[in-house]
Image 1 (cartoon, rainbow, N blue to C red):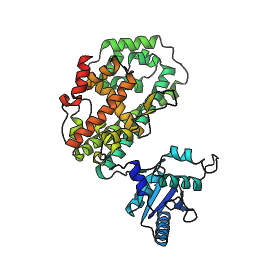
Image 2: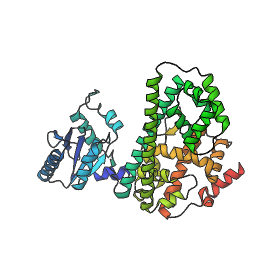
Image 3: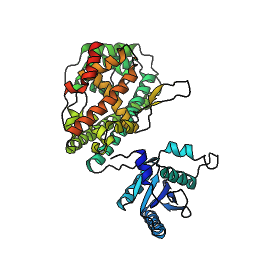
Image 4: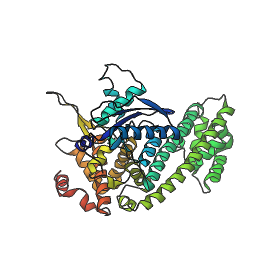
Length: 426
């Protein structure tokens, strides 16, 4: 369960030893303090390997026994991925690991010497002092099925980024050598488009084929009859093309490599998504999320991969904050600033929820009604993106409630009596 700020402060007692660690690729730096923020020993570095980790634990155990302390809390920044191996190692040794916000470290480091100086010992000290003040979150290291889903979710995002990059590269080549092609094929992923691009990518190639030749090539790619009109349109585009006519041999190789990349990444994506479906079923709660109209297998698996075990949250509001969708206001004196979301949370989870909202306003009857009401109500009507953020938060509420109660989606319960009356009145 997530703990409040007061509980965190209360956990820093005289029996606690606080360790701030600045993590890096090859060498970490540690500094050790008591609950008042007084340094107990000189800072030291240790390598990012088993010998270094054992040295750290040995040093901490030695000082803990020497000072008569009972508990060790280690704080670090969750930047990059270098912290994870150390965090897992310390967790297995029974050491409490907490995380501090990198933004807080950056802001606080100037308080002592009023300089922007950045070095490992100084950062380790700042991390420890943030922990002392209770400004940390307990490290969540997903285990079992949720660890698998998180890795798969991250992997899928990385593959999609590579796939999009390959597609963009293909479009850039066409913009140079056959810009009219995308007028004929809006979607370059289709089998017919890919086949033509792989074998006959340039206007002169298409012109040599002729309309009947293009139709025959379409049949090879799709194994079915393809419209004559599409072939005629492609032929006419090739006749009036303004594409570059030099460097074609090299450009053809480039196009083929792009297409092979696209096919490769699409195959990887299919494999990862199949595995996500299997793992989602193994959670035992996937069916409750899938019962929501507008949420599919990949999305549900991605959300659970980002959230982890939903039972660790006491309220949907904690998930909202975890995603960085909690509202903040920038006001001072008589000036009232705009309300916006904090964006201090897991960016991938926030993006997933936003994409879910976009889909659900078209596929979910109740959510569509809510979305329309938010944009058209008389008092404080929201803009499109603002309304989608509200919908994304509503999705969090629905998922949390269904999983907690182990119930499937019921449209009659989604909006509540008060909101239904508002919508009906509007």
